[in-house]
Image (cartoon, rainbow over all chains, first blue to last red; front, side, top):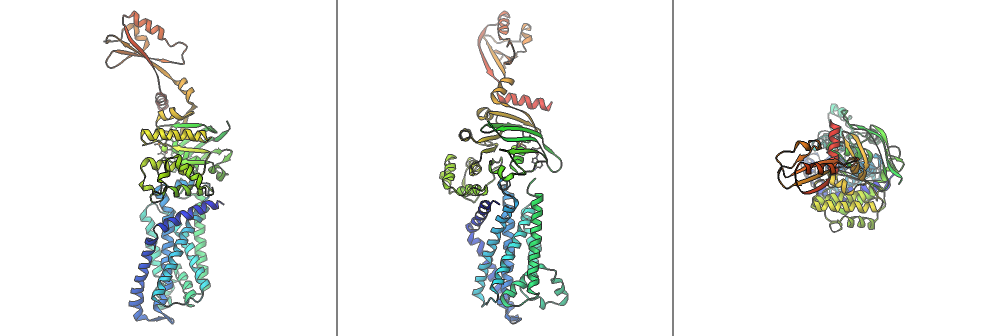
Length: 253
Length: 309
Ligand SMILES: Nc1ncnc2c1ncn2[C@@H]1O[C@H](COP(=O)(O)OP(=O)(O)OP(=O)(O)O)[C@@H](O)[C@H]1O
Ligand SMILES: [Mg+2]
């Protein structure tokens, strides 16, 4: 294992992030604030409480998850797609590193960035609502696992994508709907029974439920199921990454 | 000199079945400069990409200082530096950071003195803190070289290092290559400029259609294949070549004031004495004579044409 190389990739990627630090933060912070205004203030004035939790606070875990997932995906997919696009991938391919080092470097950096932004969103939300985190360790665990698994997923998208349209396609067409329908802004129990059943096929439901449990002790599905679900998703992404590694799919001609 | 790069029957078929390398075998000795000449699409870049790990070989074997590029790729690649044909750089990154990145990627610990040495050698030190997008094309090319040298490789591949580079920079590039050779770095470069191969290479290889047509020491190659031309200038323009001289296959210059005789330097006799005698007997008087050695370019063109025929 070439740790120096992993560090080099990680540092280089983080440097890109910090070079555009303000831009990287401004858009998630502004959109979170908008969500608070729209959902928290407008809808919250009618809903008031969900399962005994103030609605403004209730949506915080979902908002963090929404941001973290999209950020992890976009950072990781862009991170590996960009070298393919501008041609600097030649250096990764000719370096004395295996695919494992490439994955660790890029996914590690993307997960860190997403984590960073997730924490900023959390801090932002503290300005809007009062929150007590009941299970801080579980909260951190869910956050880290989500960052890593979705960064892995983003990495796969970045390898797969042949153009910028494809790079946007999966996040836009699949991830955003799944996250919105995953109970970010409501409890699954508020849905009609049919939709409750359908929701159970949405993997994001499990993540948000688990994350929300860490905050408030509320759960749409048992927290262990949530953990299993995210573990399963991570394993799935790892398997896909391993397959790419073995076949050189879309990287090495 | 020990062999540092051993290529055996290397084949590469791209997806879709196109065979870009049709069994290339080549041994390169430590410390030599070898120039690969070949027309567009000959397979030069494919050969380099396959050795460096950018594409995977269909069959064949490559060893770098005894390390197989497949089974022992880490050891093999640590020894190799690659300057690609296309300029590919992160536009917003600072020069020095991309060079540091390359060094780290190849597993070498941070060494600011080494980086400074490389950047100074390539006249990039003053630009070290500029983002790459602010550099000129020639500077970008040098950044690519700096990146390739960042881990102090023993074998350096230069894929058309002087394509689209002005005369001065080309000379600079040649100096850099000579410098590296002095340090014992083995250099494999591809080029379309035959003068380049002529100027800096120890050996020359000619590739066409995925086959290595020949590899030879430059001097030997030129001597073996070399033709010389004798230009005989006449005092009076000549309307037509006299029949008595027809056996020499002379050609006339456009203004008809000179005839050109092509002869083989390899031949036992060049036939020059005979020709000059015959010219005198034909009643022509000479103003001047000069000879010219044919260049690698002619050799190259002849080879590639022969192959096509
Ligand atoms: N990724 C690829 N997929 C399919 N065919 C390819 C690919 N890369 C190169 N080729 C083909 O392989 C052949 C050799 O290409 P290569 O780039 O090695 O030539 P070259 O000698 O470097 O030419 P040039 O002097 O123009 O750089 C060409 O016919 C090219 O079209
Ligand atoms: Mg080429």
